[in-house]
Image: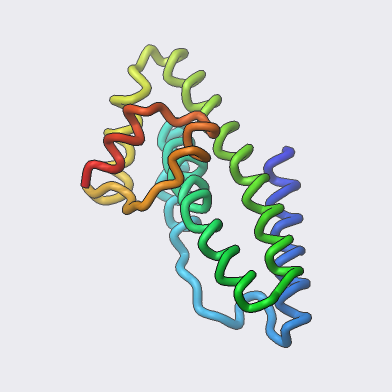
Length: 154
């Protein structure tokens, strides 16, 4: 429930900020990757935990610091504060997903790293997410060094 509440807050923060800039959420093109992955993994809790928090949300850990610097360079102080808040929350969201992932692997008697790799390859259509990866934030969010080494080995 905490993650859902925070995601709603993120949406409101971004939408309010966009409106101050004269545009609205949905005015700009965006991909539907999160929705597509949610539909693809609706039948399998381990797949959902791998792909949504440990895939899509973890990618936010990788790209948001660079976005913050670009927004800072533009002088958008409010935008920087919003993205810093979101980044902090997202690291916790990925950690929650990692904890539930490991708990489910234990309950189903599956090896977590093998399961993670297999599900990433299955749902990312036989390829791994592309780096660069925010190693420090991903480690703090429950990734193992082996998982990160595998992801980085393109």
